[in-house]
Length: 123
Length: 82
Length: 408
Picture 1: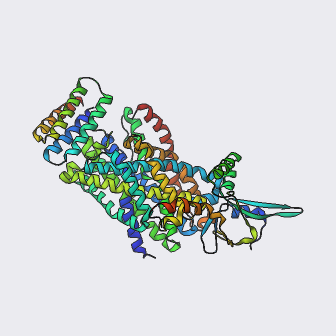
Picture 2 (picture 1 turned 180 degrees about the vertical axis):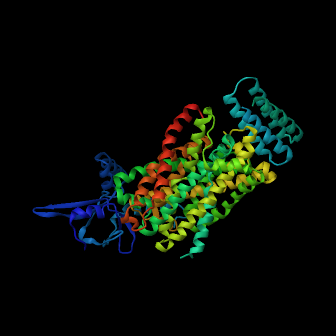
Picture 3 (picture 1 turned 90 degrees about the horizontal axis):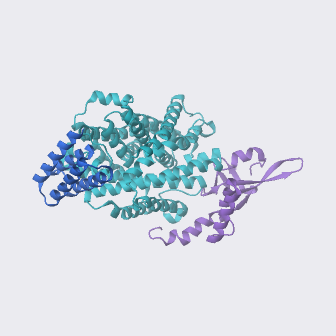
């Protein structure tokens, strides 16, 4: 597991592609959750990923919009996912994580089931 | 407007020679009619619109001789305006 | 892995077949008709700039293994990256609508059936081809069919143009009389916008990453960029010259497609109109494929989704839905009665205006050693690109309002 000193990591990790062990794309590092500790350098606790996270970067109004849309569509609980830093296995061109379930792909799954899968010739 | 006179003359003579199908010359005449009605007024425009109509009729009735006549008339008008 | 030679050959054929599309045909026809050879330099300038951009795009893909959209987000952050993406999507939406319009116009010339009957079937066909097809098959078919455009070169040569004025027009602007100045420069930037289509650069970058290019592919990349784009430019210039010969001499200014449809007839007689119709339809189809995919790639790469044309749509749900939505949205203006030729010209001019926003971030990446290592841009490439895109944008910002006020 790579070191978690926050300062360089924000630049090095933010907005990079997240992949799993099989190189499947899970999303981008949309945000980081940093923990501040007394007397010690800040540490990255989680990678954040999801529409709400990205929307927040554009402004609170955008985040509220995305959350409202999300509730309307009933896609999933909330479009914001955290991956613990301990799950990060490698940082090179991508950020590789060791994650079993893919909540990040909830939208993809939902679309596949409800829309794309229903269109002929999609399989 | 001389532009459309010349365009129609080109289409008309090409069709008279057998180089164009009916629908292409018809489309050109229709386009000319639309554009001329929009922008131009006066004798020259009226004459051009009349010739465009004549061309459409000639195309409908496969009258290539008429088309050639229209072409010459249009060419003369175009030259006069330039 | 394809052999290097085959890869280059395919790239070059794609460039020839893919260079001409509704924008380059419309702008070249207008330029030739209104200004004879006086605007060939803008095709040349646009092409030179495009050659640099395509080469850079391949280099970025090979060394950093990132596509442009992917790398721009990574380097500049989402908050910035969203702006070029939004501008690009807006312009692509208009250009795609124009291309679909172009396919319909080509079919109208071929069959006599009016464009409005073709719009929905064509959109459905385009969508279907992307939905079930694989990239190689689609690209290769449209490229081979696109070789039809060589007919323009044949026609242009057959009309015995004046080579000296032609050459003069190719190297420097031939300043028109004052009254025509506005239209001259407007057409010039529209040509540059039509030539330097950002979607081509982005599409190339995605293809290069998907094909797994590495450092050893850089020489082939360079050859493809230079030879491919040059041959493509030849097609554009041929349309301009043919238009100059057919229309300028007769005092015809192009304001409707029905006029452009006549361009091959004097030289190719009975073959003129069907070749024009078929060539237009095929070229615009190829362009429509590229724009749809390039837009979906951009969005997918910015958000980190799985992307890739070769997988079935169920495996790429968000990506597939993106191009689906874009295609069916893009036909709305045409269905509402917007004139395809006007939409074409406007979207080309708009492309010119957003060039700095679309290209500058990309250019910065090519000078950033964390992305391209030792393969950074040389001073010539940087200079040519920067000057061209800023010149085009500034001129467009002045010329477009003038053209609108003048009532095109």
